[in-house]
Image (cartoon, rainbow, N blue to C red; front, top):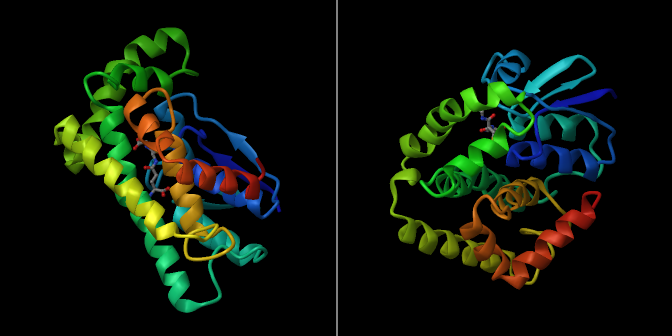
Length: 229
Ligand SMILES: N[C@@H](CCC(=O)N[C@@H](CS)C(=O)NCC(=O)O)C(=O)O
């Protein structure tokens, strides 16, 4: 199989897919967009990353990509054989992608963190373009957290709620190595992607919240080990 992944591992969704590929020991080539325009060209359907090309077939959205990978390379499987456990894993994947993501996005685009975030996103853009693109990216991507709603919460409320969700994750994990099972699934790949975005010095608030939870830190190391380090 020839696999190309368009995106940067700064994106939790790209990280999720890359770790899924590594778990399945599939070789891939990572192609990083330099500007938002490159991304729109690579994925005209949704304009988001990741998008992958597998032997010429283009697939967008991390969830659909992992599902297709599981069809093409069933080993190891990304869902439990037990239907109820698999349902829980899919649901946690969806929650991580569609809810947990926005907590970190809200922190990334606060007054304090917004400029750092924009510079991080544009780090590989040519220097003259970068100056022009910073306000654009702040408005376009930063505006999404406001539109979604999480970006309107006061920071202390956001911090309290984020800590609460991390605590919930520890509870859901219980004494198992991975969510709802003893091998990694789509749930672990999705949660790992989101927490790795949170464990970044662009957002000291989320980094501290994660690092204050040794059980979660151990869990993240476990996912890393299982997915190629
Ligand atoms: N549901 C999508 C979400 C992908 C997504 O939101 N990607 C972001 C990066 S973290 C993106 O490409 N944003 C650029 C944009 O919206 O213009 C997935 O799971 O792949």
